[in-house]
Length: 387
Image (cartoon, rainbow, N blue to C red; front, side, top):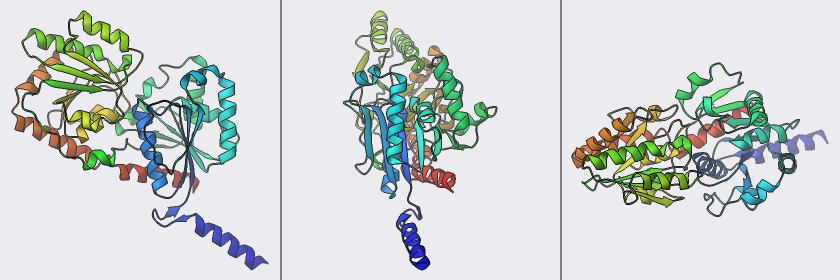
């Protein structure tokens, strides 16, 4: 009888062993508010799919469904709390937590990771449960509570302190978190999709007149800085067009600002795009003018596509990616005049010079942020927590 029990246990252990990844098969749950229009959302869709591809049982709990959600590997088991953000808004906070807790009890994961507002929701919903929990910092450390009220700020702070691990996006964030009482801190960058890694090098069209930006239309992205630079360029006789991809609360205000500057024909709003790679091929220069970032997906992808990129040297992310003057250019946040000078410099460069910067940009991120490498790091983290 004892021998039979030993054989049964041994058989279960062998079934949990994953040959492809040479590790134990884990049941992992990711949680996020939405699955569209953002770097965290994009990262979750890739990471969840990558871990499912390695043979793990992966669940993805999304608070609100959107018409343009990022595509996720079909092996990932997705569950939506609500079929729309409007429906989600109707549910009181306690009701959302109850739904989330019920779901966690049903799937009983070994480990879970919460992104953005789903982080402190995971903290409450999983209270008393035996699972390992990972928090993921998705913005500059000092700004993680910027959009939260008093109660949610308290909950978010408790969440990061109680999490079994806190995942930072870049080494530059470490210095901002040294005083935090977090248990275990690891750095795992954002994954660069295989599609971008395998794509052809960005073509250079010679004129360098079409600029592109991609990201949420929110205050922290500081699009007005780019508008002021375009206006300065117009006055100096440098004719450029700025194309913007993204949606957000600042859309109407930004359109009105472009009109006030008399730039309606030079600043074009294209809305949100789920795949920027084919878009990047149309443009010459990528801009990012944020006040602060976590680790900007859009910048990584533009560099991975081989574009010449100019970004503000904001906390945190860009300086981890760009070596100024080598694989891109950095400018002080808010300094529209310096940005205009850098754009003018790029316009005056020979196509071969711009291409060389783009090649170095691509080479610098293509290996470091390769999808497989990032997936392996997440897998190793969960494995470490469970062991």
